[in-house]
Length: 418
Image 1 (tube, rainbow, N blue to C red):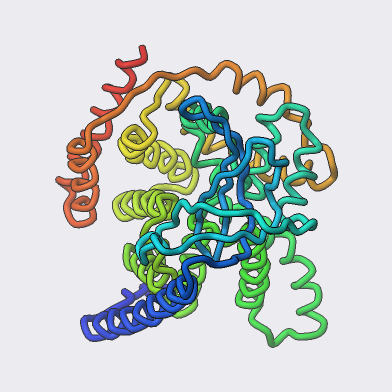
Image 2: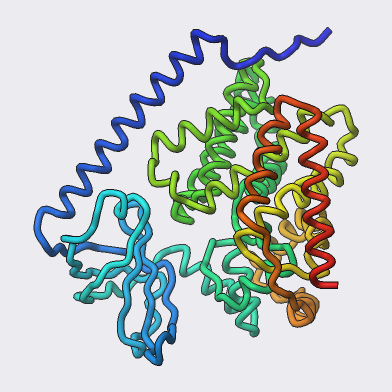
């Protein structure tokens, strides 16, 4: 007879947890404010930043370089001459003027006027890997695509639009989906040698616990390598919380797990509150948990197929509101999601051995065929859908209504482009 997994909180422990998280958030915000005040000690400051992206933009008949920068866990933007050489992946010393920067701006990320003082010659490690990946592809779109897929490199508006039209944007943004694939891959690779060593040298060790700790450590290094991107940070925290719950025989697939992970992340990194990528990632996991709450009795192969359909349909209103693009390619996102796991593993292996361009012809022809139209929904429609989705956690009637709203919006979008 198997033991039934228990819930995470009773009333008393929940209150204690909220108080602890509040205290942690207060400490984090105090530290952020200390860094902010230090930055504003004088009207100008010299800071060291890493260039996440560098592109040329034309506006009001003026052409200039835009630099997306990483500083103290924040994203900021500055501009420079259009003749600047590509600085992506470089570390810069710049002078900025801080008088007009508010604390809210500091948390959210901001635009700043700057003067470039010095460029360090060495590239960031993830940029080195990104360039190694790019060297295996002739087409610029595919260089961007695989760079983003494995090193979270930025992509051009052209590729972003094509991915939005095809419904494949979520597959390129490194998140919990990718973390799950990498976890399974690492566990599969590490399991045999660990079992061999355990049987001979340390049979007293807990195999599953040790394998998880090794896998989590390697994934943490990958997280640091990529620069702690919000969606992957959320997934990593959920993985840690989930394992702690599982190890203590507490229910893992639950809204409590998601809630605990989100609150801990916001308490540790308050700036995530303003990250669109973070909340998009949370939304995807929320819909998976809603589905499993009502349909976890299905077989595994059924879950794999139906979850792909479910998440696509329920996230479609969010996609249409924020990205405002749709095509008849878009519903194929369901197929892309199912095929992505073997493609990701095979493609990763091919890039490691230097044959990453094997699928270039097929991918390039697919990207060239993708065309879309502008399709959007109003904020009130999105608010209704999200409200019904939240209520679906507690009510089957709300679940049915949220499904009807998602189907109605999908039919509306298809009619717009048909």
